[in-house]
Length: 434
Image (tube, rainbow, N blue to C red; front, side):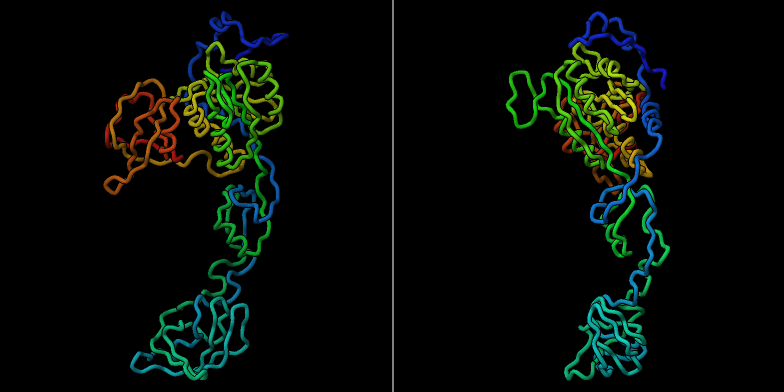
């Protein structure tokens, strides 16, 4: 439990809007802001172990997180296999072949794909072979059709020599029994699905789906597709957080939007009980109608921290109730997305049993100057550009947290230390790939 937790008595009734005088005198507002690294550490430490495992079919495994090392139990390929239609030969037989003096070999048979031959290719002989077929005994090379001629159906003319191992994949050259093909904690990729299939695997052990509920708060919000009245806006956060959670591998559920009334929010909080993660957006700051923080306390949520020294996204709340981890994200859509990527995404990854948590990071040179207000660790939206054969990042001009459209062009977040006031072209900063 963090020393950032507050202990407030639980009233017998919950008013729709809390008394404003109590808001003005509450000590919570005067507390210091939690450092970004410390807040992230506290989030991750709240995940004691990954979720349970399940066995699923290979067809369902894409993008799931492996919870067991995968090993090949067979040779891949299981025999010496040709990659080309042509003729199986002993390379020594055609070492003198050239366009002006071709070498003639006796054709002794044909091997289609899916078949093998019990004949051995002897010196002076060749066999026709199709792509994917097993190379016959005695042959150490396959010559593609374009370098040959077979006009009588009994002999083949070869017009060139062959190099080492042309067009043959040898038994076990791709995989051998006992070879690890993927490790616990890796996310299944299309290539992995293919290699598992090559190993004869039909099912894999993965983390079960992580359940994640989403609640939007705000009397001004309406769902997309409806007609907003004066003073109302569409609920950006409910949809963007759903998409972010799904892209991160979770199984999100939209629990709906509520007006700025505590009783309504408590009802939806009940629906979220038992989920792995619960996300709330909006109403988490210190305004007169920001009822999320106090309602969560009255719902029995154990507060771990509230308000972080970052920009955008300062009003972030994090707590837990039972086994459910609860995030209260800001209502401004950019702040909500940034908080998700910085805090929720790493928690999702750890819950899923991944070996690395959070967005992929790197470093890039700034391509344009910018003046900042110091005081909080800032995360700016940026666009990666190639500059003089090195990686550069252009700071997007519009950075206000209520203007969402620049997120369409951003592919990174730039992490700017709180004491940095001026960003100059050529400065190197850490970037988080979106």
